[in-house]
Length: 196
Length: 399
Image (cartoon, rainbow over all chains, first blue to last red; front, top):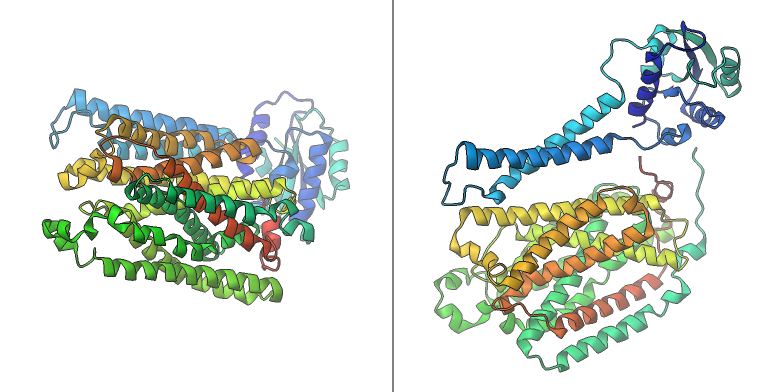
């Protein structure tokens, strides 16, 4: 749930290298449990950081609130794509049945819209579902070849049993000395800088 | 993160202002029904208006039974806080046995197939006579009511017993028994809709008809539950118990079944329209040839699907008191239009006609229903206080 947008945040920042100390992507902090991560996230949020993210092996309920995330835009993609599917599906059948290849079928008019509703409905579903996937990929800036966080050996545990917060160097509040200390204060068990 | 959420006793007992509900609603109901009897619009108009009102409230109550069965069948957690109210709604079923009497008395006005002389000249009705005859009709009706009352009473009793013992084993047993309960519910609802509504036009048949009625049941119960809980909250009950997360979920289910209703309604229409066989199409022609009925049909499709679909699709609508109230009221109104559209063309297909009796019968049955519901709500807590999943429901948040 939170992952789509958070990945987007991370990706957006790594593209621009115009920050004070180039060569550093940011700082990575490890937490021992979902609870400590949740509390830490609330503190990072309250401190006013904007270019940061949380990484977990599984979805954690309430983490989006603790991170202060806003509502996802995926549903807007679904609505637009779903309605486009409906319109396209109907127009396609209208064109085929009345212009391209008009056939009399069981004595009904060429444009017999009730017969077209099932296909129109299916096109709407197809459009909506594609919208969900497309929206997710676009917002998360996927697919991509590499992300700086994978420079960290420790980060590989994120798919297994580790919980991380990463704060990026391009965040206006970022300070290469202060930010790691702050992360330790709020309960990180291990903090390391990450190269671009 | 696991901390107990405590429930204060004032919040789970019926508010003071609701104690008079049974008396007021009962009086309004009785007066409306007696007035309907006396008004002298003729027994035919009365029977049809009464059947419309009867089916309207019965489908809502059966929706309550469905909600309870579904809760256990799906092993739901979130809906614990509203389940007791649905149990009370389904607990009013014995009243509908009494309310069925006028339908029985008016069955010669309602059902063409009960006239022996009509059957004598009608090969199709003779063919259907083994099913459509009065004796079997009564046996079936008795069976439907017996199943509904037994299932609803059993689930309600066990759930209130858990309030005292707190035995989590009761939930386990009810979860197992909800599956056969659901099967019996589906079969009885389908055949009841065939007997009481579809046989108004004994020549016509549609196998999906029961599903269509079922969709209406579920739409009306969610609309009703939303309004009931909002009103209770307004009077100071359930304030910290039912949250906007629960309303959001009930709103989502309302939205979902509005779509389901349209899906089933269109499926019924399209197959008949496509095959274009006169034995089937006349049923829709009765609702289309006369201009006012045509308007009613269009109004039903737009008002029961298009408008609520676009209104309920956004999230904030389901999380605001005003918008959710409007949506629920509208759906309860459209449910009446739906039932009216099913029943009335048999009587008035030549000219669309609204009678005062339509309103008074609806009000009369609804008043008696609310009176019994209010009496049931006075007993015990408004929520299942010792349900093993109550804490989960109280802490529920939409992901």
